[in-house]
Amino acid sequence: MTVACAGIETPVLLVATPQVNDPFFDHGVVLLLHHDEDGSFGFNLNRPTELAIQEILSGFKIPWEGDPSSPAYFGGPVQPQLGSVLFGSAPDAPLPDPRMTTTAAEVCPGLRMTQHVDDLALLAQRPPPGFRLYLGYAGWGAGQLIDEILRNDWLLVPVIDELVFSDEPQAIWARALEAAGVDPQTLPSWTQDQSQTESN
Image (cartoon, rainbow, N blue to C red; front, side):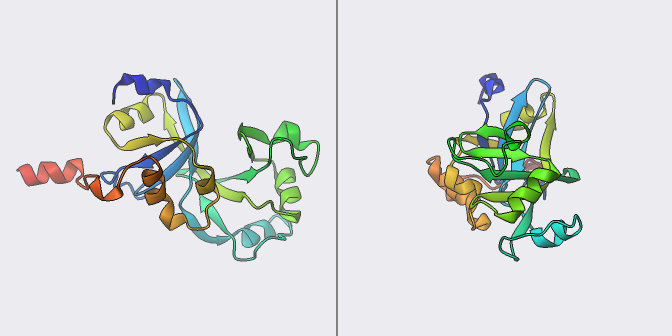
C-alpha cells in the first residue's frame, strides 16, 4: 500500500488483519465515517456489549419498545460514556420527526447517525429494523490511521450494507474479508513483536 491511501474516501470498512492484537480491534471491523488530515473516526461493527439497550435507556427514563435483549455495542475506546445511534432510513422514507432532518445526519445512503437524546427517545418508541446504540467510538489523530494502514494493520473494504446491522457480529470479520475476495485463512497471523522474538 502506498501513500495514495491518504485519499481514503468514506464511508468505508476497516478490516483488522490478524497481526492486530489490540483488544479493542482484534478481528475488528470498523465502519469509518470520517477521515481527513486532522483525524478519523468510526464505529466497531462487531463488538456487542453485555449491556442491554433497555437497561441503558431506563436510566434516562426512556421506554424501549424493541427487543428487550438487544445489546448496546462498543463503538471504540474513545469517550465510552458518549452514546451514538446509527439507524437505517430509506433515502425517501419520512423520519419519525421532521426535526430529525437537522439532528440525524445521513452518513451514507440509507444510514443516519445521531447523538441527540430526543432522537433516541423517538427511535426507541418504534425502533427501525436497522438500529445500533454505540458506546464510544474509534478515533485516530492526524496521520495515525494512515500509519496503521501502511503498517498493514487494516484492509480497506467497500461498505457492505448487510453487515452494518448484522445479527451475527461474530461472523462480520470473515464475511467482510470474503466479500473483498480475501480468504481469512490466507492472511498471515504473525505480529511484529512475535516475529522479532522468533528472530532473536
